[in-house]
Length: 285
Image (cartoon, rainbow, N blue to C red; front, side, top):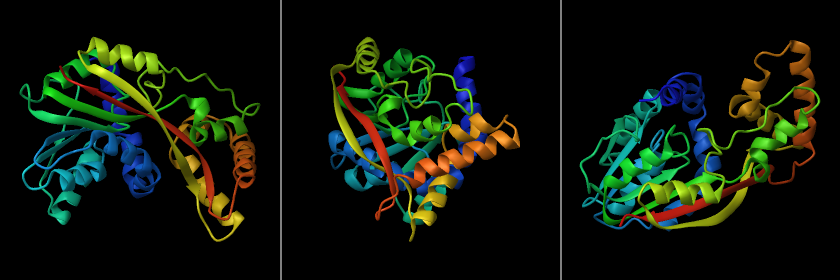
């Protein structure tokens, strides 16, 4: 295991994992449409064996389990102990036959040809060595087995990420997003996706764009929507990390600027921003 992979594991068992656990229901709701697009492309069938990569608290694993039925098999794998623990609790309450493993999906975990389908909703962009990780995952696929996942397109196409950052330009210095590093935008470049999966041994790699509104905030008034959205901006995403080392004065200025930006796009349905993804499919030879 590399040091960088270990850093990701530390993060998802530390503050990042804690935030995702606390706001898991909110995050599941906001990302459901993107996961459904990948689910449709994956087309899980009754009786199939499916691996859910980066399963988090299990929402996608449960959908897959319902699709494959009692004759199928679903295994969810994630590095975050808090999220896997929540997934196991939910599985017991739902009485669904899903196995959850606390493990790094890039490591050898399964016998060759164990699965018909590999699926992920935003769980495959965090590998330090993505070619090696996907080569290992491909070995777990049966010949002709399928891969389908959702990943974010470029930051500039995703206002859920860049809108609050743009609002505080001139207030807080910001580094450019490194889209080659492990993180939410590591697969934003379609050429890189094709190269990585090709070098890992997959065939028939295709990317289809999918966009859907990402609802930051809801409420009965513009003010309520704005405060709901503002609270989420500071809970999940880059803003909390960016402002952590700033003075109270800078944080106050940043809060005012972000509040104004959010209020300016509030509608009767809430505060919606752009969310743009790739739905990636491929198959094992």
